[in-house]
Length: 337
Image 1 (spheres, rainbow, N blue to C red):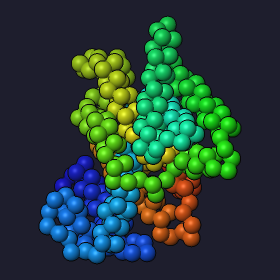
Image 2: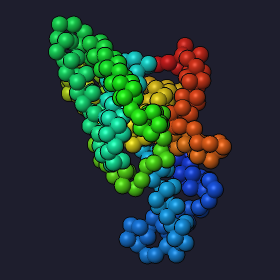
Image 3: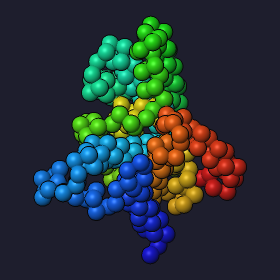
Image 4: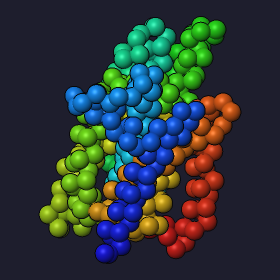
């Protein structure tokens, strides 16, 4: 088996093992057989025969959190890999065009207005899409007379700064005893409040965003060489860029709406994927998705089981991701590209 197939196969096995271990970790551990019976029962199969308290823990608490960690980790890592290839910049992350900041504005506003959890998640998703749309609109108008890509990046920075200011304003007017802690905690990221119903709204956007990226990743490989070279090979840069931006935005906005702002996954994981399979996006993007799912699931397990109190997920990913990125920087001379 070639390395191109061996690495994804090994990572898939590792991911399955990590999922099984995640169910087994914690105050109450559940073996794969129990988990399988509970899931089959709730999907319309025969009764599981599991005690009601264990059934509720597996289906309503443990399963949504584990599935959300896999989906969010894979989405952020894949979006980061796609953006880094598209903009030909290894320092690009999924929130480049303001998706995370916009989602933060939507969620903070929803919390401030005392909306329901579902409404807050929807507001975060819609606001994330709106922020990217605003950045793209500004970049399209101002980039006609110059470097369109650079203008788009700068537009994303402007929109992100605007979103940060709006979040600060929301926190400033929030009730310091009740609403402000909720906004702050949401912005730090976490999967403890994810429910079964909360998984359904993020599943469709993630699939709609990820599938086209996987299908068109060979065109993204060509585009990473340069626009002129891509045109000479029959690839329309505008179409590919549009698909990548829409797909990455959908995945990022959906992930942030469910888990809050979880940084470093989309920046660090694609570099680790390059160390394993090289810079070819055809191999690197799916490997990034698998690594991202494993990384966030393991980090969430650490947060959930090994620490005396649950540290916000965004804080833990930064504590793990920053030193790891320094190691990658130290090795950039022979593995950066």
